[in-house]
Length: 449
Image (cartoon, rainbow, N blue to C red; front, side):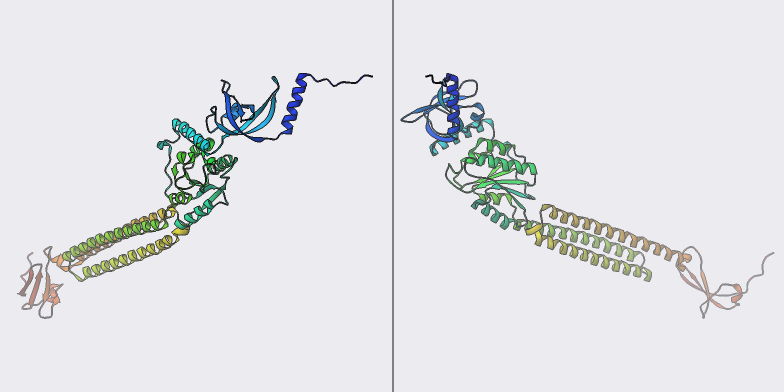
């Protein structure tokens, strides 16, 4: 009796064994000590993980190695997330490493120091790379957990300092294995949307392991590549992360980060009040100077022609001066009334550009008032000069000054316009530019042929 036998080749056996291992074991975590470390020129890393009872060979491909935040060395205790597999050419059981991290806080501290030294050598922490924060941001972005204590502290402080400042939250995980990718994604989203003038990267306090996501090299490079200034507010005052070192500005806590970013409403009100007082003082100085020039012109005109007509012109100038001062006072009052609501609304809706527009409006009003004052005075002066010229042209005294005389018959004072009005012996008065002359009429001599 013959039996059919299923005969495996070595390759088939090893391949099927590999398939059983890879499908039978999901990704798992393994703790062990690094030994037999080899780092060939290909960029891959080969080593063994061992404990007191056994050891297993491991392979870390170059693409995974580039994401390591620390340097490997024999004798290190590590945690490895790995896929169980089989190296077919030798039939050797092995682990394919997906992720590797130091085991314990001491190892995390070592990884932190190694990454810190490496990034410092690259110049990522240089002060010359850090950008200034905008003094009056139009909108602030928060990259943090939407349910943590940090976001509540941030919103409270921002609302207290500047209630009118809009805030956007870009939700992200701040702890755990996927936290670095989540933080980087939120940072890249904020840059892609370009909705904010400054970003706050924040979370509350915790252990070194809790804050380890903020010591990720990829996150550090994303912060440096950000087109928007980044303020880090991670943990408490004693906590320090790689994100703190590479950020444009570091705050000891999330609340301190909000204090750095948000302008003080009280400071803005004080600044607006100072500018308002300076504008009002400048207006008063200009009005005083105009009033002095107006008074000087009035005195000069009164000295030239102290007549009733000139007094009327002076009165008109006085009225014009009064109207000008009234108009100026009204416009200054209106400007004050327009400015006051701006000051009162600063805490809820007045960013820096509205303050600037209010200042521009006041400056424009000042220029218009100055121009109106100058044009009014010029017009009144021209009218006065024309009136003076007319008075001089029509004045009898002006005619006398040119050598003419006025003859009147006494005692009636009747002006003599024809010789027939005068009889011999009539008393006459001759008025010339220098005074009056009395005379008696005599018979006229016969005309000569």
